[in-house]
Length: 337
Length: 303
Image (cartoon, rainbow over all chains, first blue to last red; front, side, top):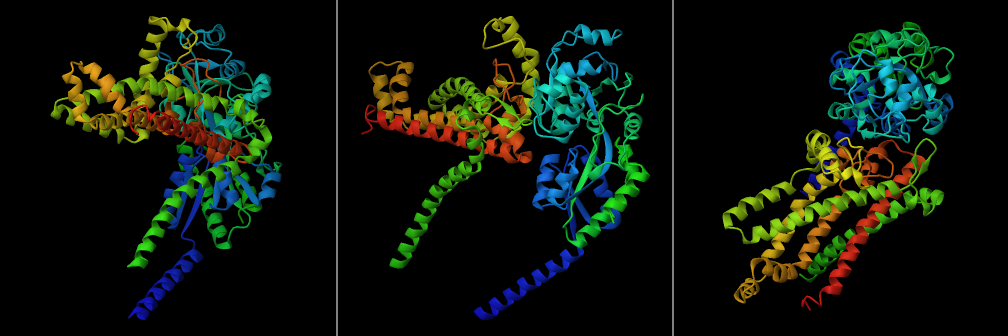
């Protein structure tokens, strides 16, 4: 009796294992994780892709740095990051990197009585607010840049990310470019020593804190600001013009990118020239392992090619700029083949 | 039969030993993983106020001070409330005691993230628009160093308030149970010789229940020290030394939660070192409490 039981149990287990191997040969699902900056698009893509291709793609928005750690450890099939790895770093860990989308980081404020897009900030003023050198909204410098606006006598509360983040990397990279003092005192990174302010968790946390605190100023990925209906600031770009964040101004900024001569597709797109360019534009990247199984690789190539060809509309709807055709071909010839 | 007996014995021994090994394992793991940070910064890590991921320099003091301050505020606010509530519940009419007692027990069952959401959406705006202006400007507390002019609803005081609400039910429930265990004879005798209710509470119930009161305090303390989610939402997450009760700060637990997922190298090691410090803090409090109770047990007539 016992022996038959054991036998049938062993048989059952064997069938399960056999079934398992069969499944993995076909690749049941692909999992990715990383940056929260492009997460809204990635999530809409994975949903649409499952409907057409029938394969499950998961994307968890856990942050760029965490995504990089996971892909290095081999626990996921692809990672999303806004903080690009240099060609050497990719080489060292056996990773391949390519850009996916361009998007904008915007500055948001909570100022009662001030309409959407009404407030303008110069480069030096923006940097000094985040350095904690300007502490009141009715400061003479802000007033001088906004003669038509009646600024409240509120304290400025800076809101920034508490966790390490690719959005912070893009933003601090920009501040380092426009303010020597920022570059010297704080620097650029996914998490830095913020001189002032309170920290929120991820993009939604920053939006939430800005929405709750009168006199708050923060930065976030554009889509999150639109969804939370927050007041975006018009910023001064490299040509000295004030521009509002929009798909057009992100596109104008992305048009300058020279991907062909960027080894490992390492490029930071902040502070681009052009009268219509939005100053804080960021690129979000995808990392894959060079040593991943051929079956998985084939699925990844299929998926990303689908993203480039069929995902553009969904991306633009969420205010991200898809890559131009020439860059897509470059990526396809170098990596996705 | 005998075999079953000894098997059972070994099984129980194994279970008991497992708990001890687990604790030892935690210490070892934290010590091992944090060794790089200790080698790099030495004991100076404990008193350094720097936390700069860009230049890879880390120090524990802001997190430690934030943890101690928020915990202290929580205890100062929660302890008198919990104590008076527990005293009242022991002597209250049965139906009132039952209703309020259940309410307090249910308060303890609320997950901490709910407290955090409440803190973010209700308490922090209320602090910014009402409480902090009242404290700073109406009561003129901004003239003394511990408060300040720079408030935005987030910070140490808000975190301390949330923690106070969170630990209140724990402390109160334990105190109430201990007070109930005071032998009725003792209390009745006190009333018999003409003690007022206050005197009975002070000299009989309080003395008899000291162990329980301290137990409640330490449970509350332990929870406040390690609380993560609720604090994370309202503390402000500023890696600097706080300069007033209104200023943003950070605690060890919230520093870990904010940075752990993305950290590597020296930063990860520094985070492990912070974890080790937190473990030592809770451990130290336990040891102090035990030894205090042991030393004073003779005086209370327990031996």
